[in-house]
Amino acid sequence: MIYDTRTILWRELKRYQKSRSGLLIRLMQPVVWIIVVGNTFSGTQPLIQSVGFDGEYVEFMAPGVIILTAIFTSIFSGVNTLWDRRYGFMNKALTSPVSRPAIALGKMIAISVIVVLQASLVLGIALAIGITPPDPIVLVPIMGVVVLFSLGFSGISVAVAATAKSQETFWAVINFLAMPLFMLSPALFPLELLPEWLASAAMFNPVTYAVLLVREMMTGVSEGGIPVLFSLAVISAMAVISGTVASYVFTREASRPF
Image (cartoon, rainbow, N blue to C red; front, side, top):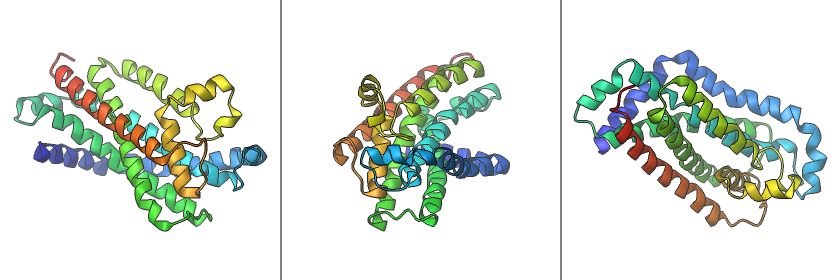
């Protein structure tokens, strides 16, 4: 299982390496987001301060951009599974002795590697513009949270790609999931600024816990009174459940006619 997963992981990373323009765009996306979003909403700093966040808006927003990067890269990258089925790689893999769950897991880990590269770039920009974490050692657990979170969303993406029969279906489902989950979180604005019913709904959104956890580690500001261990438990549970479901669905669906 470990060897098979590593083989698929290496194959997926080689795919990204060969598509250098695509890799460059993926790495530039978070740079554009942090610059554009940071300047677009910089005028909302008084609103942020009104709910107890005394720093600059870019400090509040940078953790949200990290999670934004993780969401969209993770959940969109499952489209590679559709291409593998269309162009025959999946048939070759399924006729080999490679473990079926290892194919799904290898793809998920490869997506997480790309997400970590993007998140590292955002963190580098954040440090360069003056965002100073309470303790530099927190950069390591931040990357751990990003990996867990991206595994959860990449599992969703792989599962949807395994069941979708066309790109249109895949993109329809993914867009239906990604944007609402991101917007219904404190990534760009505090939960206190949302209507009460939306703020309550946001507490059932795993993105909320990822954003709050990364923001607390980066700025030292705790929001909503949510314990760190509880947020970490939610993200870990999402990763485990998503990976399990993705492996099961992939094993069941990948060999069916495309």
